[in-house]
Amino acid sequence: MTVIKINAITVPADSGDELAHRFAARAGAVDDQAGFEGFELLKPTDDRTTWLVVTRWADEDSFQAWVSSPAFGQGHRSEAERSGQPAARPVGVSSELWSYEPAGGSGH
Image 1 (cartoon, one colour):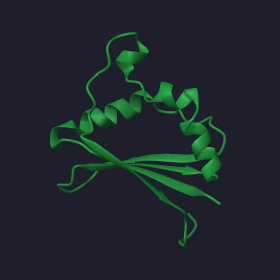
Image 2 (cartoon, helix red, strand yellow; image 1 turned 135 degrees about the vertical axis):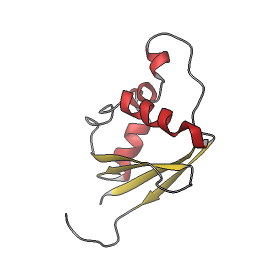
Image 3 (tube, helix red, strand yellow; image 1 turned 45 degrees about the horizontal axis):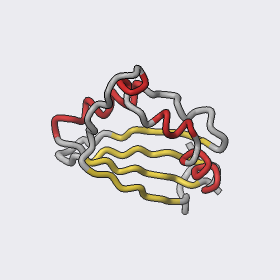
Image 4 (cartoon, helix red, strand yellow; image 1 turned 180 degrees about the vertical axis):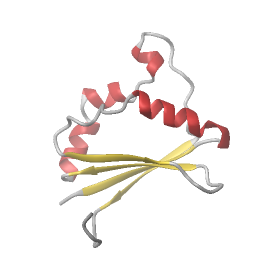
């Protein structure tokens, strides 16, 4: 059964664009992982400062295999680190990982 993992990342109000830039720089990094079904980065449209990274996986084992893979570590390194430079400072001030499974809805 599909599982949904949501990383809720709280960023300072002026850092959202940098977060979006960093995600854009690694777009597609997870696309080829077994069991990966999709990804969305959700930007708040009100005064909240929590962005949501929503991923869908075929099952929990697929998600755990990705988290344990070298690709996960590589994908979570900054552009600077991937270029051999010192790491950029983190954008997020906190994050939580939420886990869900579909319980209803409609097709698209």
